[in-house]
Image (cartoon, rainbow, N blue to C red; front, side):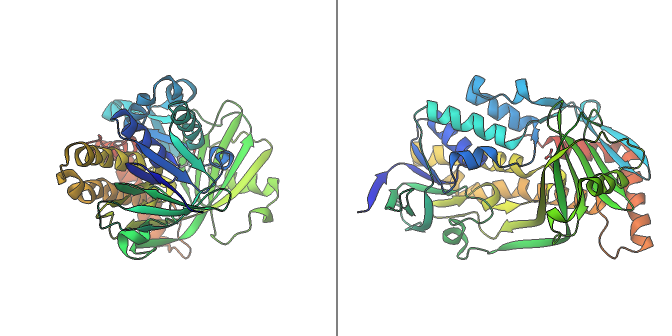
Length: 392
Ligand code: PHB
C-alpha cells in the first residue's frame, strides 16, 4: 500500500539547507514536508565544520531563542595566516567591520530540528527518496520509501533537493546524477578532535613546507585540528604520538596543547557546481548544487545563501503566481556560488603544498602569502570573502 501525502513544497534533506528552508517557508505561511534518509541521531551527531558567517547568524536569529549560535558559539574577529614560521593576523573587525561565529554545524542542526518539531513541521527521518517525477508539471512528486520500507509518495507544487553531495533530486534537475563542473584536489584533510585547551585565541591557517594545517576549536576543553594528508590514507595508520608530530611540524613556532585524541577522520575534498540548479518545479540548494573544499569555511554558509534566494522565489511563485524570481534563481544563486568557489579554491591552493611541488612553486606561494598579508587590499579581500558577502 502506497501512502500519498500532499504538501506545497516537498524538501529532500534535513540538513541546514532543507531545515532552514522549511522554517522560512512556514513563516511565510507555506507548508512543506521534509524527508531525510538518516536518523535524527545520525544527523545530530555527524561532525562537520564550524564557521558561520555574520549573515548566516543573522538568518538563524529568525528561529528565535532556539538558535544558540550567539550564546553558545564564539564570535571571532579575525584569523591567523601562518607561513615561513610567522603568524599574521587578518583583523576582520578592523578591515570590514564584520566577524564570524564558531558554532559547529551539528549544533545548528539540533537547534533547527528542535524548532521545526516544536512548530509542528512534518519532518520524517529514515525516509529514502528514490526519484522525482513530473518536475516539468505544476504537480511534481517525490517517490520514496519510508522508515518501515513502505512506499511513500509526496505530491507537491515544488520539489527541492537539499540532499547533499550524493543528491537524488539532482538527476531530475540536471538530467544526470553527476552533471556538473568539477575539480578534484590531490590531497585531503586528516581531522582530529582532542581533549585539550585551545592552542591559540583564533583559528590558525598554516602553510608550511610540510603541508597545510588548520588549528580550530570547539570549546574550552575540546579542540578540532586538521592537517593535509594523502586522500587514500587510512585514519588508523597513525599513533596519537604520530598525529601530534604531524600537526606540530606544520605549525612551527606554535606550541600546540596536546591531549587525548578521541575522533579522527579523513575528509576528501573537491569543487563541484551542478550544470543546472533548477528545472521546472524542482531546484537544488546546498551541497546538492555545489561543494567547496573546506579551506574557505564556505560550505554551510553557501547553503544558507541559496535558501535565502530560493525562499523568496518560492514565496513569489506560490503566493502570488509570479515566476520571475524562480526563473532567475539559478543565475542569482550562481553569482555567489562562483565567488565562493573561487575563494575556496584560492585559499586551498595558496595554503596547501601540492604533491610534487617544485621549489619555484613553494617560493611563489610564499610570495603570494606575503602579497596578501602586507597589503591592506589583500587582507580586506580575504576578510570580505571569509566573513561573507552581504546576503541579497
Ligand atoms: C572547523 O572548525 O571544523 C573548521 C573551521 C574552519 C574551516 C574548516 C573547518 O575552514
